Image 1 (cartoon, rainbow, N blue to C red):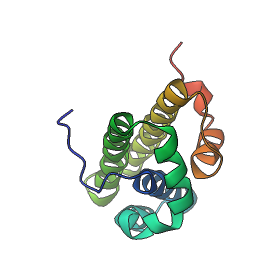
Image 2 (cartoon, rainbow, N blue to C red; image 1 turned 180 degrees about the vertical axis):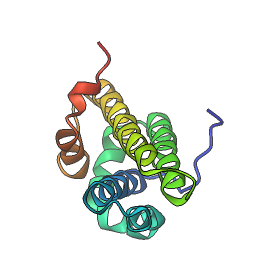
Image 3 (tube, rainbow, N blue to C red; image 1 turned 135 degrees about the horizontal axis):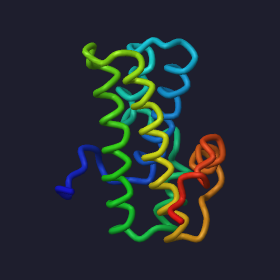
Image 4 (cartoon, one colour; image 1 turned 120 degrees about the horizontal axis):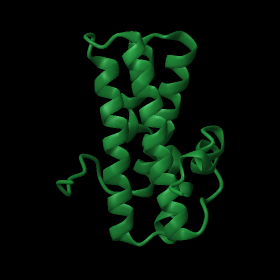
Length: 140
């Protein structure tokens, strides 16, 4: 890891990005349209204010250094997925593989959050954790 994040460090950005990734996954699975699926991933920063309350709660629960690492890794998850969706050289089967990979990637980060915090706060992150059955991605 290079210790870089491309967006400002905040709980809202983390939640907005994970929410956007969830929307992208759902859009791909439902419509199999790479351009529509990538669209939410282009608006993470603009939509961050929608998650202000959840983001503040996350920042209160998680130490800043761990929050930075969480954002760095989560950004890597959704950025790779966005790159696959936007690159027309990838075939639908490869996008399916990337879709499974981004789910696993986000679940790993949510499982790390549980290991640090003991739980996941209610709201977007908890919904994502439940929807993607992230307990299946826990390290044994």
